Length: 319
Image (tube, rainbow, N blue to C red; front, side, top):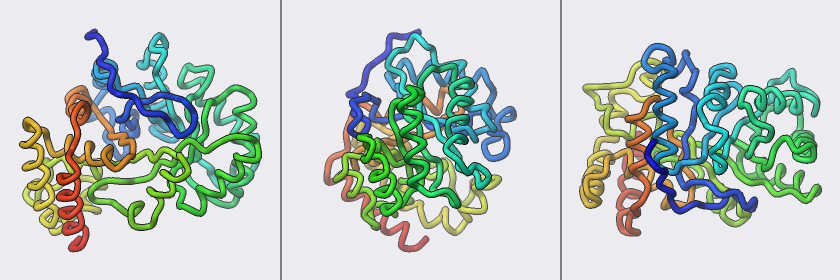
């Protein structure tokens, strides 16, 4: 294996945990329904993907108990070597409506630890602010698993500003700080800029983890009106909508040329980092992982960010 290249690490919230400024999301690992695991990528692809991550110093890996019904966690546990001491593994608890007590979260953490082959999860996140159990009850449960030494830091996912601050308040009474909020964020989804969540995270030293930073592949430049995606994504991105984002794709290509031929995907990921967020793009294979890693080691200028913002606004205005 090639010696790892360590990128400039960033700090996860107020925790002191050091993570790479770009991570990987592992929803596709083991997911047969949405991401065709077992058909267009296999376990050998996951192994090769991990090699690329380690070679490029990418140490932040995000998974969840529901990804592939636990298969994603098992693959992470199998292929992220225990001897890589700086690996930061994040997972999530899904508050199904029949999970009504704190004990449900404790049991879920223990099951995730078994699948991940870990004794402690670096970052454990609430997957959704789902009723009927209150946010405050889950804050109590997160405190309990911290006290038991089962997790190191706490996070949330898909929480809006009000929900995030409620969780923060619920944790503060125990002397804990919320480390992160994981939400969709990309050049094709800038809701968190408009509603103030991104700024609020900065103000409270909460890391903003951006999932779908490539808009489920739409920002790679691969898809056009003549080459649309298939499956679930075809319903979200019609031929008309794909046509409307081509100006943005061309802008990304032009800016990429100013940085030694960076791809649209690399430009899109670098833009997320320039906004102060941590992108976690997916990767089904080593080629995709290597392309994602190419977003590291360089930086868009402020003017280029502004140009991309304008092109994004134009695409979103007509979408």
